[in-house]
Image (cartoon, rainbow, N blue to C red):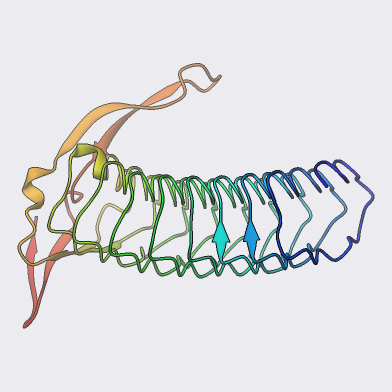
Amino acid sequence: YSQMFQACNSLTSVPALTANRVDKLGYRWMFQNCMGLTSSPAILATSLGEDACYEMFKGCSNLETAGDLSATALEAYACEYMFSGCTALTKAPELPATTLAEQCYQRMFEECHSLVTAPELPATNLAYLCYNDMFWNCISLKNAPVLPATKLADYCYTMMFLGCSSLETAPDLPAATLTPGCYEHMFMNCSKLNYVKCLATDLGDESSTDGWLTNVAATGTFVQAEGADWTTKGTTEGTWGDPDSSEGTIPVTFIHGIPAGWTVLTDTATGVDARHL
């Protein structure tokens, strides 16, 4: 069904999607830029192949509600850009998948400006770049999903909430060991964010938290694990943006550790101790 209804701007209703499996490229671009759609059907397939739903509803700018996904297993790029640019979307689909793959949810809700609440994300076995940019620039998002994984993959959460300027509280981050790029730019430009709880004791290398709390609220609370040594992290002066774009780059202080001015609490078995940077 790849490109089947692409750019059908007057389409207002769609057929049921009852297949129990969608293989590679099966629904790719199927309803891309269908401006008349206000709702999308449930996708009943229990597994989605590589690129199965790639850009399926991208650019459906009047889409308000999305039908749930039933898939519990995803292959690489399965839902990449699926609802990108759906600026009216207020109800995200349920995402029950517990078997993830490389870039499976990458930029899935990119620039969904009306989305307030994220869907639950139950997976505990993550994959390379699985949640990369998932909620990029979702400027109305206030409620982040619980992130239960205690074992991380390289770059699994990179830029996940970048530009979510209404987000005030981050999900708890329970993993004890950080991997390369795991939290890179994760909360960058979340200008209202004022609370983070990260229980890592092995803080990885600089890429693990590169720019993760850049341009958050000036004051806030950071809860760390007992025994964590965030003094090994620091800040770096650099630039942000695409030098080849019309906007170019801007100077930025990338924060790899805890922002100056935030209160730091230590999570212990006997209680919480506080200190101030």
